[in-house]
Image 1 (cartoon, rainbow, N blue to C red):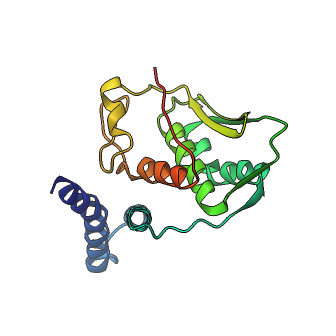
Image 2 (cartoon, rainbow, N blue to C red):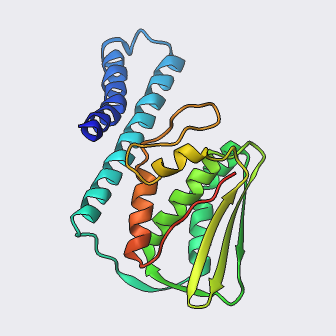
Length: 209
């Protein structure tokens, strides 16, 4: 019941914003200043993208839970993922004034993974690291080989996570709180990331100070 209630709220909030702003524009667009119209349109666009991302996450999670998520595993250059993550996160890096660095061990040149899903994993982890970093901080993605395993670590120098919040990290709609003691997001990103990693035969852990 709690999951359904939170789920309903997360869908309704952006949808209400879209409906509310569009109703105002429909009724008063000729009487509103151009700046106000642009502001309303930006809010509609932002809410629409948020709702789209939420629905995509829910569909992904449903597919994984139903055992219908198929991974098409192939060999890809590790540089492909680093370049893609850099491009996808470029706007967030500039907005937050964050330095995003990659440290890939030279003997690792290829990864045998599902391309789209592995990129989704990295983007989710890097996006979280950037979101909770201090302005002017650094996010480092390190790639190392340990015997037959490859470890990706995403490290930031942000505020960190309280010990009591650790168990919530990989549960849907159970976010940890940020430095201002506010909740952000739906908590679905890390849940999906964990499940995608496990589908690849891996595991995810977290350390924080």
